[in-house]
Length: 273
Image 1 (tube, rainbow, N blue to C red):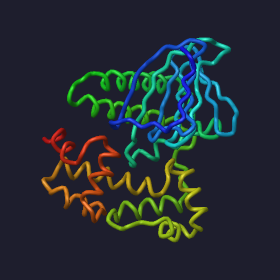
Image 2 (image 1 turned 90 degrees about the horizontal axis):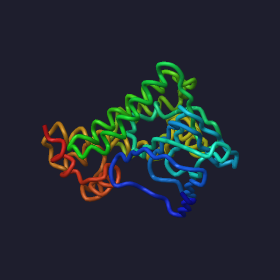
Image 3 (image 1 turned 60 degrees about the vertical axis):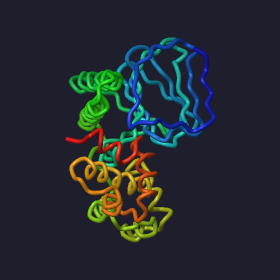
């Protein structure tokens, strides 16, 4: 398959898109602007290569799982030294609560990587296979089951992650403060003051520790809570918006659709008990 050169930043309509493909030596995908979601790729057979922000290439053999954060330039394809690459891929708008599970070691700038072994390797592969199957099932709850399977894969990955439990305490304190007060209009300056850091240093450290920007994390947590309120309560959309920190219900609906892929009312309809 020829190289796929894509100069625009891509996004996907739903919270999760997954698949499995097998490609030959010429396969390559380039997205200079990355995507607006997380990209996970697991090598099933053969090997892939990943270009990184600092231009160093990283090889990914069988079993290797690679994670690329939103907005990170992407350049990946079949490792020419091997000539074949079978892989599973998942694009996901990960809930903010998953952020600690996405703090993998960097194999190169912009490319996070784990190489599972033993039971963890078997379990992660099985769960990612389930992600692909459920995402393509066409069943009304297929996306929910795919997200559950992906969460399980991330939990198994966390069990072997050498960076487990190493969140900077200053950033942990800010995350805890955000969790206690979703309504507060958090600015980077306010969060930086909580951490006793300059805004620029705080923003850099927060992104390195959590895997996303402070603003994206705050909005993500608000959307996580909004999804819960829409599912388990009958609060009007305007009240849900206010509960999670949005004064304008119309703007809330716009942001919710961007984050979740559907309107608040459609989300409630799909997930009604």
